[in-house]
Length: 248
Image (tube, rainbow, N blue to C red):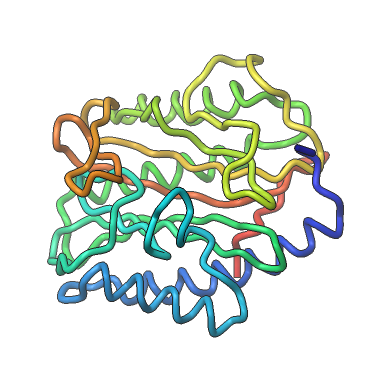
């Protein structure tokens, strides 16, 4: 597997990333009290198909939906269902698009209505952790450098960083090398190189970082039942930093 993407491949992924970001922005607006996560999934799939793209997740390792919808203590990969969102929920929306043979991946966490102070702080800390990861990403840094930056910030805020799940490379496959943990030691691990396309995705917990299988049997939830949040972008590594591909 070639970890370095050509300028042509990156251009295609940027097109797909723009489609993805546009769709997810619409789904984020729809995530209000009274809608089911299954309705969000169906809307996301319809918007992706209308744009001429394909859902990247549907059928991936048996996943039967286009959208991962992870509510409250579910960290990632939650099944859409007839669960109706209610005021105070946190819902993670993770979506992938396949465009001209290449995948992009993106996630946001949405606060439904009025949420608790701690839930809102968890969401904002996770979002900022992603921004710090993006700021750190450039040719010459290691995945350990990235993980250390995210982990130090999150733990300083009193939250946990999931160890058993991580970000990843992406391209013709949804998950490619290298793995991008959200914790680590400086100067350790794979060195990022110009032209690599990766996904940085902090997964942050209100309590313990330890996980368990979610009740749907597919997703992952916090072991202590406390809240989790998740944000993700697809980006290309450049000489002087990175360029986010999943932006409108």
